[in-house]
Length: 252
Length: 276
Image (cartoon, rainbow over all chains, first blue to last red; front, side, top):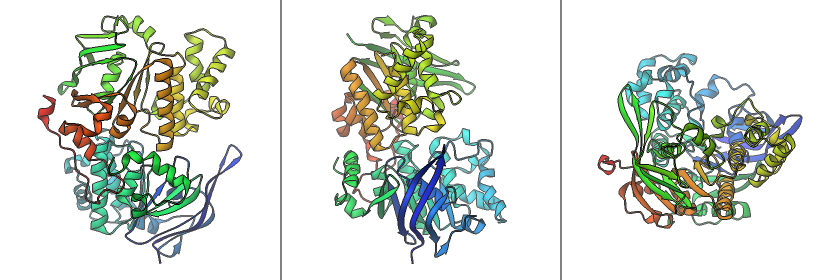
């Protein structure tokens, strides 16, 4: 049984009286300790799937199961302890008036976990931030440092699953490399399962074992990493996406 | 004669912690071509772009041996002259549509503002020109976009609105600061095609600021690589992927590649001597 099972998921928003079908009948399964990637252009519904798992998007059909359990509409504490999300923009996802210490210790307080001091220090060590950053505010950190804080915050409750929504697209190339290395190290150390969204095929290829190509809210094609590297895609859309990223090939 | 000529440009900030030099002696010439400026954040590439428009607030100071745009000395120009240049002659597309568009003003009103205030055209002509500008950047339903607030647009749409706004007065030089970094590959290709068309058809000069080396290599004619406020390497864009300077090579090597090995990506080697 797969750890994350999504069956025929549909998400519909109501916008100015119109129904917008953001996700139309998408199914996927992610095994424990696997790293699964979602790619597609903006508006293809890839981020919406992550948001639906977290209960941040209205599910209108289908089901989401984590470890065999169907998700309730009200995701409670036990869900937060298993699944955490890292958002795209580290400038928007950290509370601007909370110190790093407060951001990191809040999940501990909510879940009634003690030993806050040691856990916060360890979290900073784990993501490679100096301990002196503990009482700084987000505006005193660079984008890459903020994304490290966001990753540390997601890991405070020691979840099994990390949902990564374009975790490096707001970062420079060199900082992106450091952040991807950090995520890979943490995944290896902790046996995490990643469900990752990116529009950069090279990033997805570097991080993920299998990928799902999406377009207009629908699943277009599922590819293994080898099939991607050797350009063995069957659908035209996947091929055009691949062609647009041709300069990101190994030889290029 | 070149469109823009910059010699020994410096931007310094007098802060409590001492003098910070964001740009340290940058020189370049620009014709009617696409010049890329690449580097990490903090390398001074955005400050270089803003300094050309003299858009640096105190305590920031701009000094240069010379900075000449189309025969006009930008360093000696009065603030009034600069205002006449900004927009109609030199335009800048900012990085983030979320922060650069007015959040409480409809897109249409923002697009028409310059036409109404500066060019004193009638509301109808301004509306038609704004629609035309949105169509030029491949926005399919311009009437809806005109009536939308910035938060109702996606990142790609917002970026295109900003480009449309800058192109209405038909500038001779466009400074584009990371115009595509918020966009995905397919929209990115569209925006680049729009900019490319403008350089070719209108003979516009373009300064393209980006941290994406592969994009710049593909899109620009010439590239300046900046590190800690200095230009460490200047080369033709087609040679970028075979760059000699270790910093440029480092920037290229830290990018993941499709089909590349799964080992950790190499970090960037930052050698202080390169910027001396």
